[in-house]
Amino acid sequence: TDPRYANVLRLENCTNLVLEDFTAGHTDGMGECSGGVISLNGCQQANLDSLGLYGCGIVGLTTDLCSDVFLTNSDIYDCSSAAVVSYTSKCITVSNCRIYDIGDDQYGGWAFFELTNTSGFIAEKCELSTSNLNNILYASNGDAELRNNLFVGNRIKQCAFSLTGPGLVLDDNKFDGNT
Image 1 (cartoon, rainbow, N blue to C red):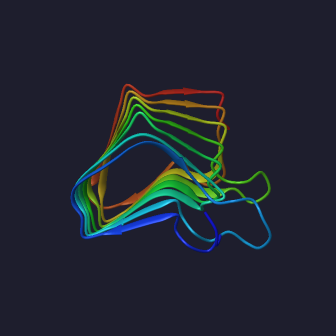
Image 2: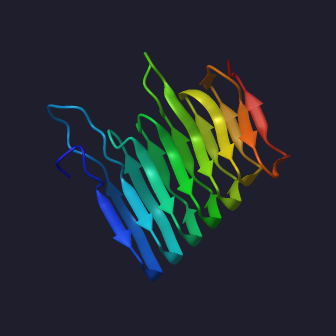
């Protein structure tokens, strides 16, 4: 989509939302890209399956004031800032996804997952690779579980996990070739 400063798809106040089997991103072109790919605001019970979310969208999926959002079997790639950003949301699950090439080579991105006032975030059975980021996870006043993920070939500039709040569960994740 064009213009590059807008979200590709923004949905507000939806219930029982299903998005499946498509690819979305911004067109190549002039000017700075500052829009995300999918932005959900005030949505409940959202199932996103078999999607391709790509840059230059700065963020693949953004949730704000959402609950029970499930992103499964999808690819998020070439986003300049983060794969998933969640504000004041609960029960956000990212499962069986491939997330790669987040952040640019020169400056890097922020994090695979950025959570603010979000509870019940789970990332499981994902492959997160070849990205240049400040953090793997950044959580402020939230909690997260990372289970059975593979982190391979990433460059992390600050710290792997930056968090304030209730806590982080790391269970059976594998790290290979990260710096």
